Image (cartoon, rainbow, N blue to C red; front, side):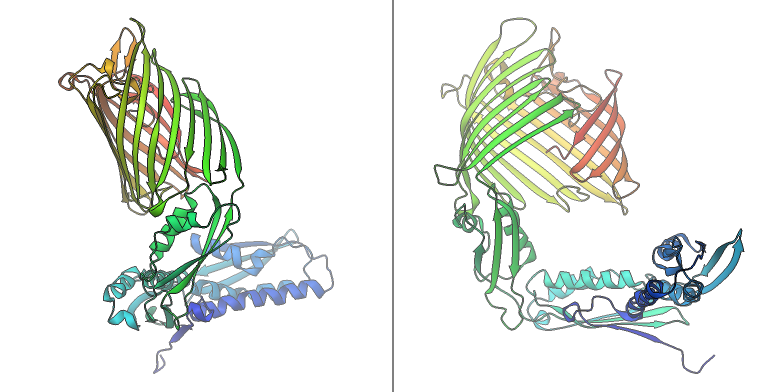
Length: 607
């Protein structure tokens, strides 16, 4: 045993210095393509031969075998039939060095590599046996900071330390080393310190003890504040649209979340197809750093059509037409229509451009006809609304006039109308808006009508729905959903517009029952009711990033008289797919009360 234990030091420059890889593995990873390049040059200039294709078999732990099969030159060139004998010998001789270099990126610094070459039926077979040896573990970690963060915002230092993902006792690998540095640096840069950088990073590997001592120095640099928004690319639509929805204030401290909020606000408008944002990050000029914004615009007109299928209402065809510069004032004129098996919808809306703080005023009218569970509802509504959409919250204030006509199996049709002021609030606090794993989504709505004020009955209407996501382990999750609504009036529901009442059942309600089949049943017709409550619990197990399964239990009711309510429940299983266009759910549920099985297909988050 030598007197001095051999030590390998991995050094890297900061990402700002142009070297994102670090340590000896980074150097050797760059050497691997050089070896391959030498081999390829040999293939290009060597005389052709009749050297047959060869077989390569690698015996190693599964994950390491995949790495070697993908990057080992001898394995990559196995299908070539134009190798000379010298080229083949070169690839075989390079195996031990290449295997060692590749395994060092995974934390194995003392692998044993053997090659066994034989000829079977005139074809070379090379068996490569790899014993990786002990994996190197992190034994010590030192993160140090300098710059304004030490005195101005110690909480940013704490957040950066918490974002470091490679802890003592964890296996060391090149990927984990790079990921930890990237995560920590991005956290430091996310607020105040846009120009922060890593000034030194070093991983000291002891190949005898299989321990890694990590050292990283961060320099926060100065605090950055935001300057004026510089807009480029507006030709069709006025730049003040962006200025009106801009949530940023000149002089405020830089925050990545606030920059993202600006981008999302712009993309939420109907005018701009893409948004590119650039914030100056020169540490020498941190005050009032410029924000450069470049947009590409949609044309004045847009027409869309779509076809699809819903397990609740059957096949459908939908279309829309939009004109984004009505009266040459950037007003948006929009017409939509949707034809389904059990429902027809048509709507027209004229919206003004966003005003100060992003509020959008509009006038609208719509007509809906539904024929579900032997109950036909024709609903006409018209009015005005004021909407503001932000990154986390949506607000809607509306004043709508409803005129509904309800037909059922027995008795004459009933008509009702009401003028309803309404307020709706939505909060999105999830880790991912498309594929959430943690957080919650909440919507609350409240409205009322007063008798003789364009209304037949005085009533108040409340509605709320929410979803809570709980991550389980690395991939699974628990989803809890609650939905409730109530119309509170001392009069009859016949004098309340039917479209403001409630029914339950279906893919996004109580599975195991047909769509809107839970309500007040009269002579075979299922009528909407005053009160509705549904709840669901669902456990999702994900086999891969894209595919998973689910088990669930739903329950709920819709009733006119709460003490006389009847509770319905359903259980089932389903498949989950994170598709490129959003989540796709395929479920099969058993309705316990009606003792029947029903399939359901849904696309996207119903919210």
